[in-house]
Length: 285
Image 1 (cartoon, helix red, strand yellow):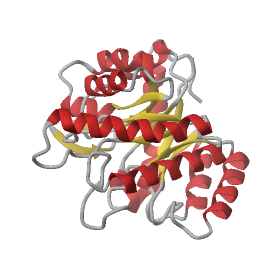
Image 2 (tube, one colour):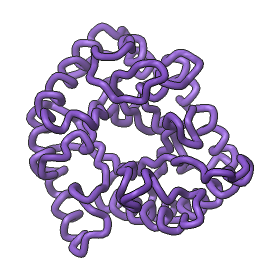
Image 3 (cartoon, helix red, strand yellow):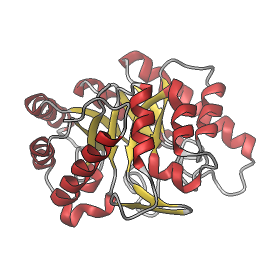
Image 4 (cartoon, one colour):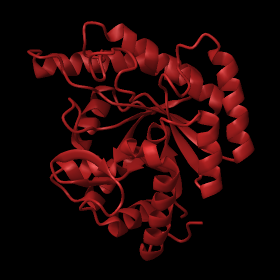
């Protein structure tokens, strides 16, 4: 099974989105992880339909697939990272953003919208946080059902849902909804999980929709270029190949924007070399 590599637009914040697609296509990437943000497809832009239509045409022209991401930290609140969340008093604003993301994904032909939990409000009991998060997800899943787009939930360090196990717990609370799945970030898993990375892949496997990938150090939530952290990527790509993962494996190095084309080049070269060492990955071109 071939692995399909993508790159996150949050690593190209100094480029126009059309130029990002051109660079990634030239480098041989298969897709793009599109973070909705002020500079790249603002979901609140007055001419959003025109922009989405133009982007759909560009993706088709370059032969790139896409997943839509909603992790821009200050899109809704210039003071609070990832605020409001689905657990906040102002959760309706987050619901509105996620619904907009689903509509955009449907128009782009993207099968998934990525999201994360954010932090629970201070002082809110854990069970109440679960109830609020579940209720918000149930509301958003109604829009997902109407548009045939899956929600790919990412566990992220220091957020309320920070491990694969807690992603699975949310899935249970949602009744095993068929449009609920997981985005596994390899660096995040190395940062906080107690089990090995191949075990994380296997644990997430029944619900795995997307993979994000970068290097990282244990206990330090900093996205690093490959080779600058501690991760051995051969068994990770082997586990994904054995699983037959068909979603994107997208590089997420937000701090690389000042040298984005070369960071993207080094990243795809590293992943191709590493994939050749992973026995279950048949071909990565």
